[in-house]
Image (cartoon, rainbow, N blue to C red; front, side, top):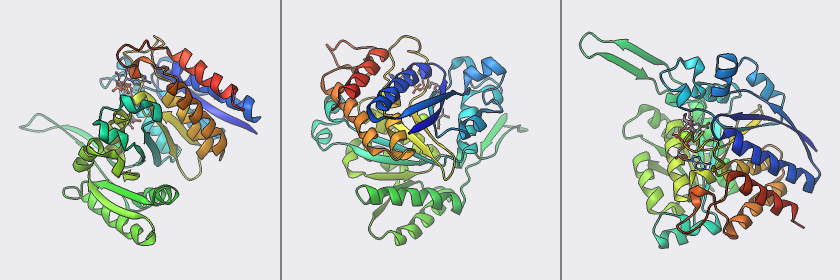
Length: 362
Ligand SMILES: NC(=O)c1ccc[n+]([C@@H]2O[C@H](COP(=O)([O-])OP(=O)(O)OC[C@H]3O[C@@H](n4cnc5c(N)ncnc54)[C@H](O)[C@@H]3O)[C@@H](O)[C@H]2O)c1
Ligand SMILES: CC(C)[C@H](C(=O)O)[C@@H](O)C(=O)O
Ligand SMILES: [Mg+2]
């Protein structure tokens, strides 16, 4: 098959990790008889520098002509929160998610077999393993609500960010999560703050309605503060976790760290019609950009998710995951996951080793 992929390399370590993931795609193509065509697409701080705005007019359109989108990361201090919205990389990231209708963000958190030692949890907890799928609502909630900033007569400036959710938005992400639970361990935890927020009360109502339609899935409600604690106490209790946009952002970074590093976790953003967008959950890591230090595994595993979810190629996805596990099992580590006494390898070398593993597969 020939697949056309939009490449949004972005800022900071984005281009470095995307280059390694593209190398892996090429190795997969060779092994399984596919060809990949790439379309470079501008988005983020690099777009601001090139054309004066972070979300150029033709960006979404170019992505729509492709079968999938691979994104590195966007952002950095050069285009910080003091800049106008249209120049900020994060504005562009939210806009493309919204414009492509990518409402379901799948963020698996897996403690890879060779990484058990890197898990910061108690040994007996780490031994139980971590393999959960966070399903984060991605195009609603406080990220997309009306914002305001005004002067009050007596309390200085005041700002508001509206958090809104409709039944329709909750139901479609809920269905995705229940379907995902059916494919996995038939267990779903829905995370909300229904003891305080009206949006969460509606969230819970809709989820309970759906639970009636999926009697084979063991459903539970978990309050977000408790979930944050349970994730470090005993993550093995979770299989699929569904939650709203901001809770999912925060909890997925927490989940990443219990698996060893944010440099390991991929994601898939999926809608009903547009091409899926695949990206690591980490950011542009300005502190290590341009130094060949970034861990490319999160982006490489994002390509595995692309194979699985956009191209229905589970064999290719599994081959990439096996190659990553094999390289980790041999003890190769980038700086973020190198324990004491281990000499880290760079971004490019890690990519090269994973490609080599794929090439060597029977
Ligand atoms: N999807 C995205 O494009 C995305 C996601 C998160 C943050 N951001 C943006 O990235 C910028 C930096 O954000 P931040 O510093 O809060 O978060 P970050 O994820 O970029 O970095 C947090 C820490 O993790 C480390 N890290 C991240 N990815 C790594 C990797 N692959 N290998 C090794 N170490 C890695 C960094 O060095 C840093 O110490 C901000 O502008 C933020 O808005 C973008
Ligand atoms: C950069 C930012 C807008 C983004 C988010 O909050 O969604 C990031 O943190 C992520 O997790 O993809
Ligand atoms: Mg985040």
